[in-house]
Length: 204
Image: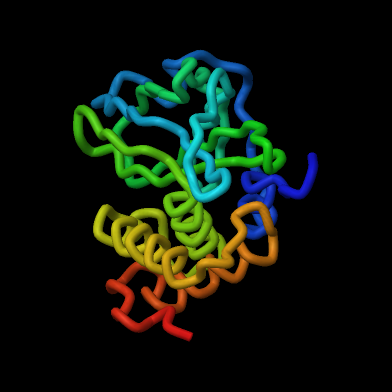
């Protein structure tokens, strides 16, 4: 590790839950005969005001079991362009996490998905990562349930994360303090995704 702390580890610690790490599994992890949703997209890390793909990196799937515990599993790797394809069983909400290294240091990019459609196309970037941590920590501290973290809430969190980054030109995704501040601000501005952030929510 360089400057970047483990985002995925931070999620687990922030939730104050014991993560139940699943045995090594293949791309069919999370599928047990029910309806299947295919999650596709590209993992993009911020570097010098640009985005670079996290190529040939492990993709981790985070789900909740029937008792509300976190279950994690490696479900494949990104390709040479940072693209991923993961099949999961339809459920309330899941997260994907992709780690890698850029010229800025070690990093992890994540995003929330509501796998209730046959195919969901979403790229993962700094904004989806802030929204992901915001949503999962809201579940972890009991503010909302995983069932409440629906598509509308996820969209509100992601839109607010984009607004926060744009309103804070000095925001450094590789700074743990900056990421924590972003997550807290997005949660507050959206009431944990219940509503869109106000237009001036992040105005100094």
